[in-house]
Length: 171
Image (cartoon, rainbow, N blue to C red; front, side, top):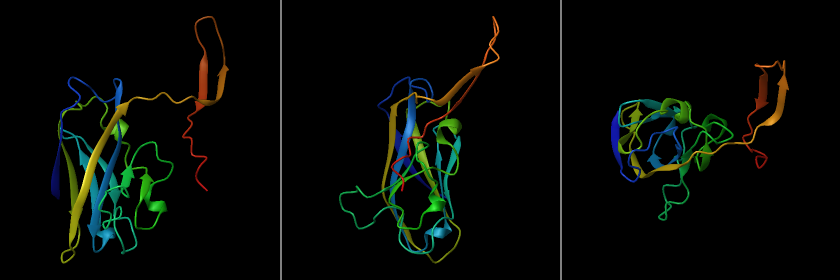
């Protein structure tokens, strides 16, 4: 693995899952054969979350590597409606990571040195990390759908609901 360091220092004494969450990781990676790549994010204390594992069809990149403004990137977010394996490169847009970042990094300090680890399983290919950004945000509480309360007793009730991902924009 090649590791790229990301220093975070704007959130003193903040803990993931206690009012703040890792909302997204934006990146642009230029590579001659993206299906060779394994991408994972590593927290300051060493917890890992797999972002992408050998996805793509052999052409293009993660994000637009020709974009000098770095606005056409691949974004990994637990809020994304679809995983990256459902798409073909260039991977531009928002994708759900292979593993949940909110679960894997729960309880972690926000400040510290985070790492993007990239493994290229083949020799001879070349690539460059063009841009990386971690986006932390205030935790959101999504309004549940299909809320149901049953088996109500004086000191007990069962609650069920569906979590809303607000994915109506997907066609």
